[in-house]
Length: 249
Image (cartoon, rainbow, N blue to C red; front, top):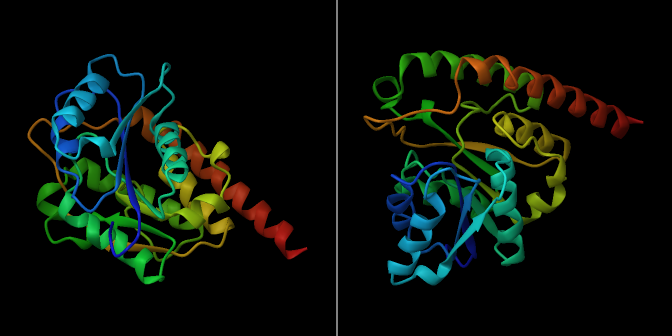
């Protein structure tokens, strides 16, 4: 437990057999439940995750869930959220399966929820001094553009680094949004923020260390930058405006 709160970490993973073992083994001891969601990987991601769990002294806290058909990173996270709620966890964090999120930052992501000052906490790599050296230049430019757009569509003008997937959410916030409607693929973080705004959830950023190894790769490229993310932003903005208009009636 973390500050007497039962905590789960969801790890969405697709074709991460080279990195998933280190990621699972790195989860801090205070985490009660670790949920690896293998999103129909073409490699041995799920098998490696299960073998790693079997070798750990606290491996019983690790559950490996497999999608039979690839559904997307957003859908994998939602699958993990549902299992965490079923496990009666009060806070659910998300860490990628590629080791791009520093476990040392997890406590600071959880703390605002424990303190009662936020319902959803997201990492902001731009608040960390290493950002300009660690993050590839093309990724910085793309992130700046998408973060500015997400401020408008989500209604959260104080948040940044919208594409950072290092997050934590309270169980109450998860129950306040319609998980079935969350966008299932890339663009999930942008859609999630809009839905949280509609539900009047408090969101805050905390600094997290940007991690990019020598063999780093991203699923976000020019194709996903132009489709579907812009359309997700437009849909999220429209849904938020419509919901707020209904509330005002």
